[in-house]
Figure 1 (tube, rainbow, N blue to C red):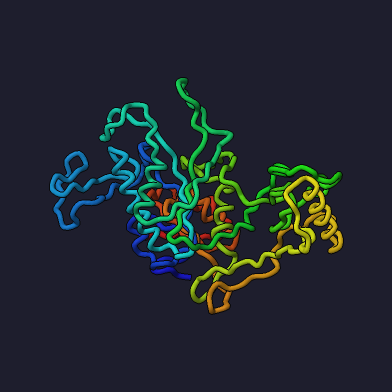
Figure 2 (cartoon, rainbow, N blue to C red):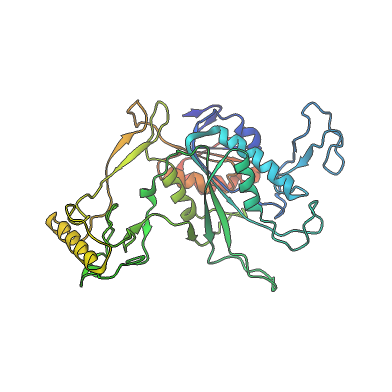
Length: 393
């Protein structure tokens, strides 16, 4: 399958900013990536390109700047100031917004850094720069919807030699969309609930607590909360260990981090004509509300009556415990009623190829771009068992 000039499920070397321009509008279902962090390291093998300025100018660079049009020549992440980095990253994300479908989601993992004396901006030395949020706010101003800030907690974070602040052990994963209505499969990434009752009301009958050790119904309202032991909507703080790879790539995505992002942002099948995702039909449990003909007050005795009535309703329908939400079918989100296509996942900073591996293992197409051809060997080794084509543009 081709997408513009690209064969899907293939890796292309080149500058992401230029490669993105070759993709068709509204063609990608989800983008998951981690761009080069600001002022963290020199990316060996990455070729400098010209950012901004006048494209018709005959640049004469002095200290990487053109005095005639203010163009800068360099590599993303190595800018002399954080404002320039944010500007360049937002310009790349504008191309991502163009190629992302209106119902698509863009996930960006980005880390922070500290100010240094040689920076162009007037921020005192040793200050946290707040790069993730500066990028997020700039993205909002550029037209994105910022839907969620997720925190990736790294229990095995790299130790630091500093002794005047806590060790940095987390990063942000931002969820952006290009519209306020989009595809999100919450059911695919439900997580284990940690507590039996979030805020239990008084008067729970004897034995009731133990009977709720399975997934609650989606609309159960018997005791003021639908969060019981079992399954619940995925939270926004994730404890996931970092992963190493025998290759030399600095920042390898853990598959445990990116796989849920693929599953919640794409459906397993899409329309082969227009690419629209198909939507799950989740079974609703309507008999678990207690006696619908009885109006209960919000007091201890009424809560006991409602809970007893609800439990009895489940038993009458053959359930000792509330049934888990389950998929009973699928429905099309377009008029074609077709499901012969597969969703496409894009990573414009592909690195060692975790996104491609995870996408293909879950039946999705993918595309990977990376500026550094030195990673090609690692990507080929890591994904050769998936018969992934490695192409260079």
